[in-house]
Image 1 (spheres, rainbow, N blue to C red):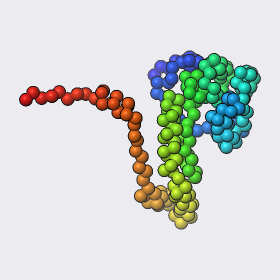
Image 2 (spheres, rainbow, N blue to C red):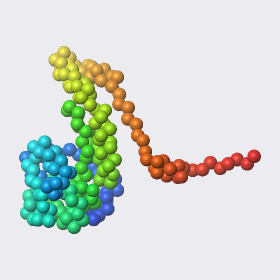
Image 3 (cartoon, rainbow, N blue to C red):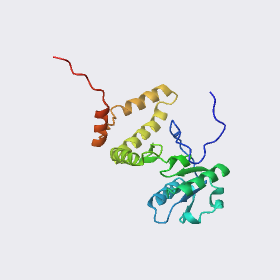
Image 4 (cartoon, helix red, strand yellow):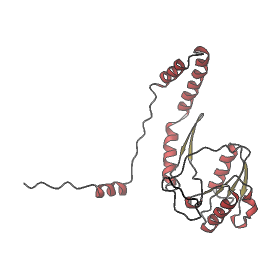
Length: 215
């Protein structure tokens, strides 16, 4: 299989097969978040980075951004949705080899941020590749309602059983696996979707018509 030796450039189209989902260990890594002081999304992203022990710097005046502010970064997030700023950051990312996320302008970045659902030790990342962030937020809210405190307690109880099984069934890995499968038996998740009427109308219009039979 042949691949291009040229890296993607600012303004290139989105990858045809979407983004590859991955988790990052950012503990101690320098991360820069660019967005005005009253930009709630930038503040949320900075707080999320601090939760995983990243070394976070906030740039609250995007117009005053200097090249050296991001040159030594590992990961940069930009929220202003400014084409000129995003193009400049992409050029800097190519030159200095840092990961870049440009919110709602995925063609400039290497990273599409995921909406994270948290319940106890469980983390579920939801990404639409930057093309439908509102859908990602709705999915997150729906899953968060289902994966509530009761679910978190259930997972904690499973973790307790797993620890006990290491002692009770020591030396029998197959039995430990069967025990955990049995413990989770009966857990189900019922997820349903509802769509806006314009989309239902579009599907109906695109559906093949069945020819009427002559009497």
